[in-house]
Image 1 (cartoon, rainbow, N blue to C red):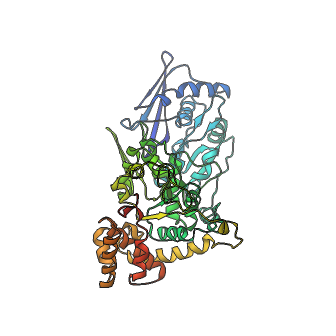
Image 2: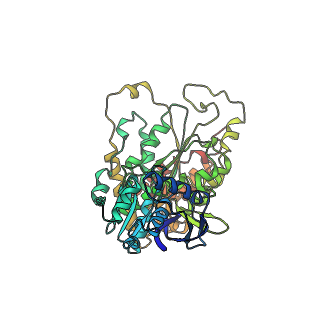
Image 3: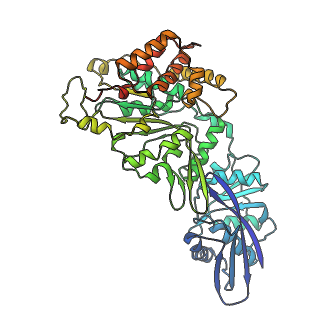
Length: 513
């Protein structure tokens, strides 16, 4: 008897419906799975047989052929266990198959019949609704993330008995219900850390406010213990809250990567990813034999923090150059290509030299001559060219550290950032792909960031006196435009230019001795 059930495969952050066809016929006992399955799918028959026997269901002792269509798409992972098991039970007459075609069924089976969580539940649910399925049956642990999709009945189950009972009319399953908007607004600005906890460092807070307002990449340079990591971790708290669309898009990526817990339904705060400097190229940008999103995609709509930037492998840093420009990473293989979005703010930190105390106000640098320049040269010019703000971080003195004076809360800084972003949204209204000043092309910089004769003279003097490189020109104009937006000024004034010039430390000739 031929029976069809339906599952799904995830490619990139989109899902493709997979039809599972099971035919049980007379003949010698044999199991066949066709349709380009990987090893995890082929091994499913052993898990299914053990799960059925443990729960007192009959595994047919006949010839069983399982086809996974379309046959030209590779099927990967163990999430098809429940789909195949349900089809086998229906084909052998143990499940009523009248309503099977109305539901998408996914889940990994344990040998005792319980279900393990799957990856990509959210994009699968979105595709199921798009194709008109009545419901989606999946493991209980994934039910909340799938229930974000309305107009689709989502049933979270704990074992195969519940699925059999549901289709046979013996068990009543309760659909998982999540109010998307309530879930979205519940913890929209709930961050564990706040800028009010940082003593001193007002100039660094100002730099990060400018970075957040214009979407600029930033690098923090300073000695150990100066507070670089602490400041970077608080950057998401001053970024504008996620929109519902951004939240759904971010959640899809984390769902595909299997990073959502059972309690999570939506990613409602901006991601902050901080990979270790030993990370591989593939783990950073994504890919692998079974492509998965990398850290730059998991940081989509949030912050990617690279601590101790010169310690990262040069090849890992170089593969980030294109995603930084295009805000998307493409993983190409012989038979398919997948895209992952990667629109993130890059925040990097580094010591000024191997010992960490070059230019320190109190401690002497013990690095030999030439070592500082060699250390800084680990960061390539093209990557540095994509970082708008270079900020020197100095240690906090004892007086500021011991002060009881409360610093400004992230909430107030965030409000100023939102106002500046609103100005930019109005400016780029006819270009929906642009969201912030940092994304302007060189031509747009010249059209939008116009400065008068006095500004040109100041910029010329600065470039000559400080030895700024040519690549600093556009960056200074972009940053000064953001500073003007924060000040509510239509024109870029001299003070805006002067402040932007201060944030080009690494471009100054002789900075590293």
